Image 1 (cartoon, rainbow, N blue to C red):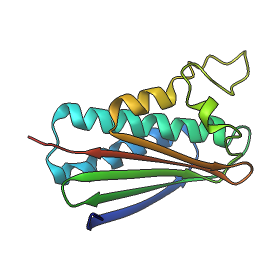
Image 2 (cartoon, rainbow, N blue to C red):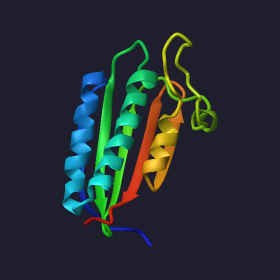
Image 3 (spheres, rainbow, N blue to C red):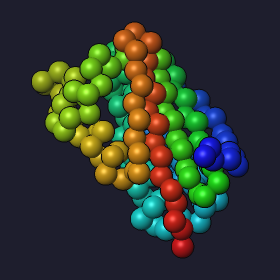
Image 4 (cartoon, one colour):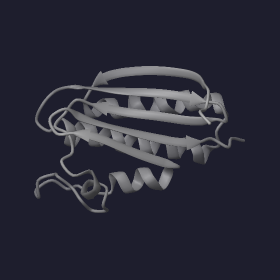
Length: 146
């Protein structure tokens, strides 16, 4: 059975590291309508931070672009957040989702744990990507609340 969409917001911002905090705050603010616990708020913020950082660091490596964040609330307090870039794309999604996998050059310190962290904090993580066209990461969490 399909859930009913109760609220939705679209945020578009340049893929700059300073906007990562904006994305975290926007996600936390949107989630507030569900009266989340502190732990739930922290989980959403952390997962969003990882997805946005991946878009900035990997999607737009050495190039400019925008990130779109679509925030949706469905009945039953289902929070769905999609982070979309129009960057280089992920050639092998399965490999990219493995712990410690990274496309960063060896001289950059990257843990390769972004998707693992997202999966640990959210109920569901879906990744769609096309080489040269970008990536969309959809995070889902049902907020139990206080």
